Length: 176
Ligand SMILES: Cc1cc2nc3c(=O)[nH]c(=O)nc-3n(C[C@H](O)[C@H](O)[C@H](O)COP(=O)(O)O)c2cc1C
Image (cartoon, rainbow, N blue to C red):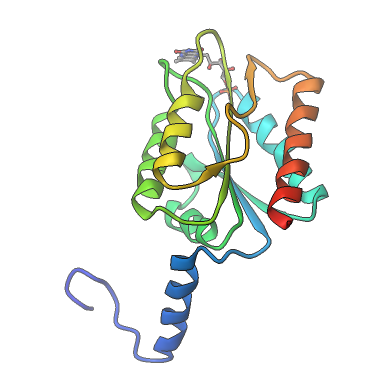
């Protein structure tokens, strides 16, 4: 172990240099990441509709529910993706704590060259999307739409179609 930096790579260190160069330049592959959490599944339904839209547009998107996923794994996927979509319902005028803490990690890394989108459900005043938008901007991620899709309580079929269409639109935008 190297003090405070972790393991020492004895074999093929070039592989590590190459990965860091790729991540630092924000060179992604045709991937998108959707990171979200939910209390009663409305935000999750939106996440699935966005995923379907991205997939129809040719983007292999990976979906991560933040409370049950390894955040380091998600960050690695984001570094190699073209788009990052982050969703949360509103709780106490803000985002779920697990979403906020994940965004703090991401803001520290400032992954360049990514398109972002926020989404989520709320009950009355909302507030989660604003928090997520601010953090994504702090992470230097360019937002595809501002505000992102937001629905009151459960999404209707029209709301889900809107999410699907946005997924398609983002796929077209990052492909160009
Ligand atoms: C503990 C709790 C706090 C909430 N706080 C707010 C709030 O401050 N503002 C708001 O607009 N909605 C609030 N809501 C409503 C949720 O945002 C709403 O139920 C939403 O549809 C949940 O989305 P989900 O199904 O993705 O969890 C709150 C709900 C709960 C359970």
